[in-house]
Image (cartoon, rainbow, N blue to C red):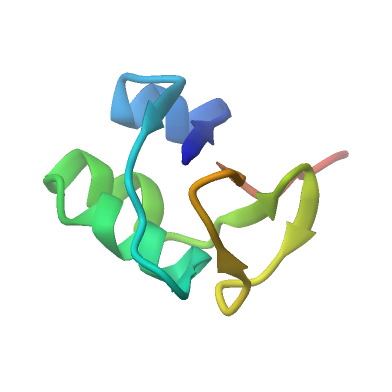
Length: 80
């Protein structure tokens, strides 16, 4: 699966995207937890309030994902 990162998350992790294998019945939250296990910068980037999308549709952590999916993580958008 392809996982994309945007804005501050991309800056903290030092990458715009990664390819990763996911087990059957994986969830977006499982993907996030696996990425956070990569180290402190990943934990900092993904442990705060982040939004996620699967195949360009906003979703929550319980969303089931497969090898063919694209998941994206990005910070909440604020305006003023």
